[in-house]
Amino acid sequence: QVQLVESGGGLVQAGGSLRLSCAASGRTFSIYVMGWFRQAPGKEREHVATIRWNGDMPYYADSVKGRFIISTDNEKNTVYLQMNSLKPEDTAVYYCAAQMRPYGSYDYWGQGTQVTVSA
Image 1: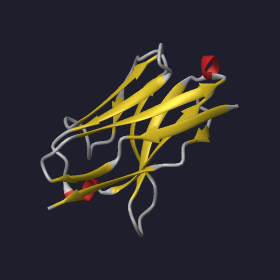
Image 2: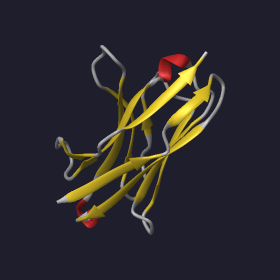
Image 3: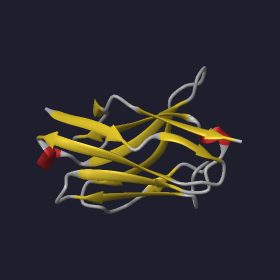
């Protein structure tokens, strides 16, 4: 089992920045990939960014590329999402998730943290 807890959400003006954190506990040594996802009201959940647990191979959705940075700190068992140049359309509940094996599904999810970007 892996437990994930997100933090760092809040209200920010357009053009501002936020850093989300996702603290992992439990069988963290078995994590293969960590991902960030988001879901806006009335919309489907969408992928934002992923990274291997060892910090390799960051990958971003086109909508956030060049603005968001995903990173890991294995000593703290934490994955971060640095969000810069935020836009109102980035408003959503952000979730982190853990994938335990290559090509597998995301087996564990956090409870989510709200990010609201005002115009």
